[in-house]
Image (cartoon, rainbow, N blue to C red; front, side, top):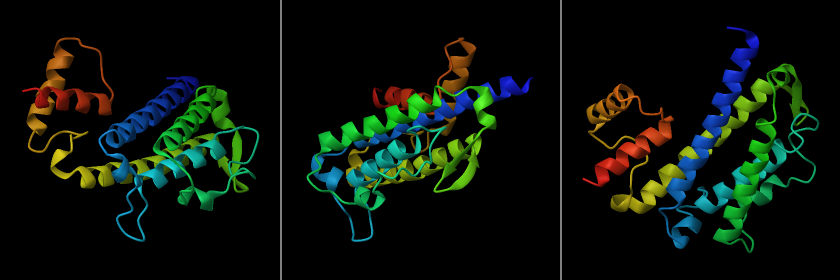
Amino acid sequence: MSLENISKIYLDDAIGSFRSYKRLAERALEQVSDDEFFLQIDEESNSLAVMVKHIAGNQRSRWRDFLTSDGEKPDRHRDTEFELIEDTRESLMAYWESGWQTLFGAIEALTPDDLEKTVTIRGEPHTVVEAINRQLTHYAYHIGQIVFLAKHLRASEWKTLSVPRNRSAEFNRFLAERQAAGIEHLDRLEATNEFAKREYSK
């Protein structure tokens, strides 16, 4: 396999992973009420609203002019991402969508040759691969927090976004049956979501 093909596979997988994490967060957020969205469970914790605002602020800074300017933009005020001032759920979710669209606009325009380039974040040089991985792991970290907090807040009313407890064997059979039937491959989140929906409908 050529280096160009490997680079294309990497980019496709990175884009797919970003989209999967976005959907995971949104499916968690859809389950909480407005009060829960803004709830801060203790003084050291961030609310779901704050995490949404921080991720979007980071994205708008890191991915705007991705190849040609530093990832920490002069107009970013990171500390204010952890403050809620006249923010509504609607305005924050619009900000969230804007952040993700900035990300996808940048990464989907990349070519395999771009992976050999260098970008900076706070003046520190990163290969494009390192910069992508840095942001992918950063967002995964915070989206894990979003899912954990949403699940905690919904408690017994939570609809799982992963393989339901004590259903691993059934999930493996579900995947095997789809593969044997030649049904289109689903990504990790979509596969678990499809299985969970089937379980809930029983």
